[in-house]
Figure 1: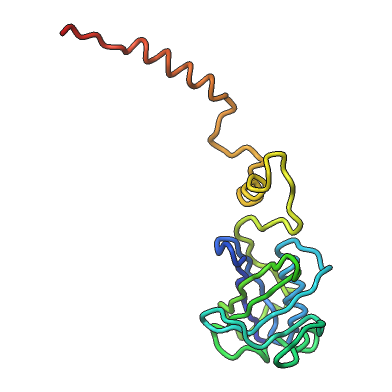
Figure 2 (figure 1 turned 180 degrees about the vertical axis):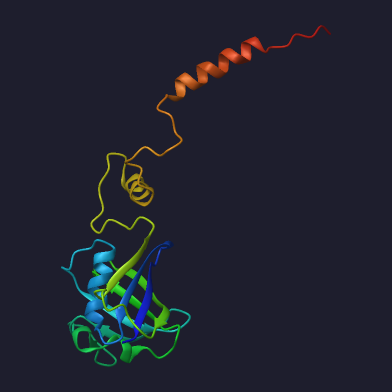
Length: 188
């Protein structure tokens, strides 16, 4: 059985991505659930995939269900559509949108195809997690939304290695003391 390796990027930040393996015989619903799991999102909202080209333009829709909206062409349904049937190119791309009110958008790119899978491995399989993913529902901070976004992106809740616990006041007083002793006097 062929194994398809997809890289899923967060649309706003390509440094945040996940690599997922799926069998070519699995459905888009399996891929959908593995993306949610890899970014630690719940499964409570609407979702859809779009077939895409190299320029990330949206094509045929592969939806979790048929939603109450106007379609140019009826969407394919995730639980009835096998991933392998939608691979038209060795660099196939999809756009995945989750929670239409928040509009979480992920870029899904096929990066490898293996002819044989590992018989001991269960698919789909998350094999790589890179970067700190977004909080699905976000957090509110006393300092405002901008700080919460930075805190989520860079994980400021933990002290980073290489930074001391001294305050800025202590460092300023130390540098002021050393300036006094190194002061030069010249007679003009």
